[in-house]
Image (tube, rainbow, N blue to C red; front, side, top):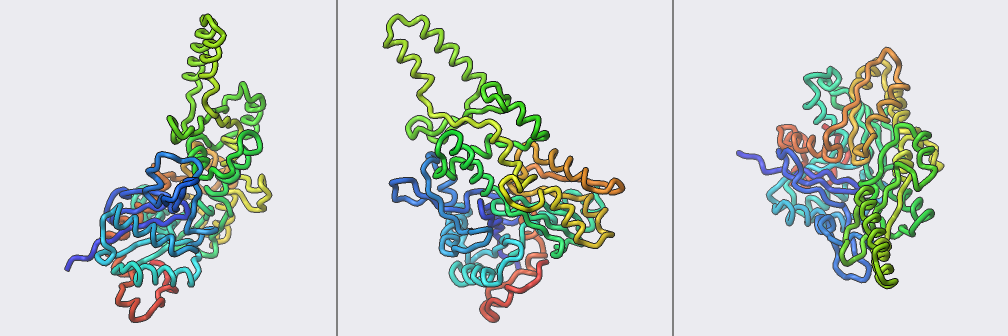
Length: 423
């Protein structure tokens, strides 16, 4: 008897990664949110929001609040859109494998099970934290070369939308006493960027979706903050200065990063045309070409925003930076495990894909790790979908059938599975 197909859904606070278990990559990645444009009635949901051409003046609603699933009605709409429209599947024909937050509340787990079985009608369900699937995936990729990976030992740094978690593992199991959380993630970084540019330049406080795109395109992690700050002191000559042309709602709908060299050539061309113009009106018309676009200028904001993860006290958050949090997590486990854990540190989550993150993190962690411990930091090609890749392999293996709760079991025992241990 063949097993039913399993839908793998990495249900993050910022985005959903969805596909069928066994696939090499998710079918689609889309915002875990709904949005409405100012003055419009139509609601953009999930993949419709990802595909929208206009990204300014969007009011977002998210099912997650402070890292936990709080709005089940909105989440149901997003899941149904993903299952029926993106995957073109019927829930009653499939099992569901989803990620959930670490230390998820039993009431939320019970509500999720009720949604999955009673309202959506899935045949089976298994939920576990995303770092668990990341460790499974790393074991498959690195097991041939790393002893720690073969034994299921290591530390997963999951820098996601709501929080950054540092999760130590041994024998494939989460060492819960060593888990550390930094109350910073992609959402806090976007909010900080909005505040910085609104104070220094244009008011962008209502442009969360747009500023998220700006952050992804322009931010990077500095390898030497003091040197970069000195270089950025004179904004006009700063090597870090970039200009983002904001959407105008007519010709430019999504905005774009202006190429400095191309813009310099255009400025020089217009200046020559102005000098050659015969009338004052013609000079004004040509000069207006350089002022037509509304431009958001970023300078040291590009690297000071990601700097929050390394120095949370920059915004008054009295917590350890990400490298120090790894040391705290390892120190909280058995001392004999330290060499294994340091030898397999895995970077996952969308924030870790910021350019320069791995190099800066590795340098700071190496300075804190004892000299007699070897250290290996692994950053996958796409940290955003790495956990989903682990879910895909897990959902297509015999392990899913062993640990998943079936609809019949749920109907017989209710939400008893809310307290089950992870595989």
